[in-house]
Length: 208
Picture 1 (cartoon, rainbow, N blue to C red):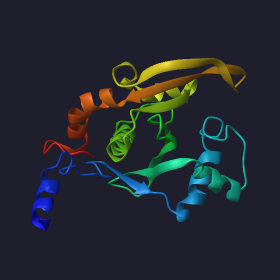
Picture 2 (picture 1 turned 135 degrees about the horizontal axis):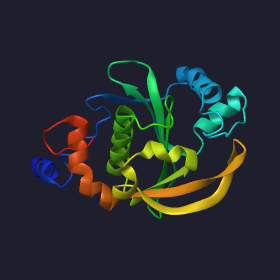
Picture 3 (picture 1 turned 180 degrees about the vertical axis):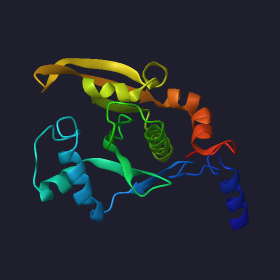
């Protein structure tokens, strides 16, 4: 009887799914307490200062560490497989399991305004991780107007604009729009085979 149940499980839909945290060029590494000080300095000393979570405010170390995990479902550092230096941080937060959505944030530490193929690979790996691990029907992305260019050509074919808050946030002498965008599971599933091939190379159709 036990062997029959084992065979049923092995042949059940999804039994062949593999969750990966590494692609050809990127590793998603969990955030450790030893990372806190370096991450805090990256947020407060670079061009992320006015445009990331605290928008210019400088909370103390304890407040900052608490905010790092506030309402977070999953969070990883994006690290190149050829270097230990983090390229950025990806976060899934404010999950709503009843209504089937979660918010996605991605902070690239350098070259913020320009798309980076390697960092985009890390974000794609993380999105696949979210859709594989939980039954969310869509991911929300909230982004300031200045950060929109980093999404590159993804807007339109994968990322949909759902709304815009006009002149929502002040920076540099003027007000900027805030974009509310989304990635639907159906749209992700449509492109997932090609995205996974981009991430891992040709091979079995397993998830990331």
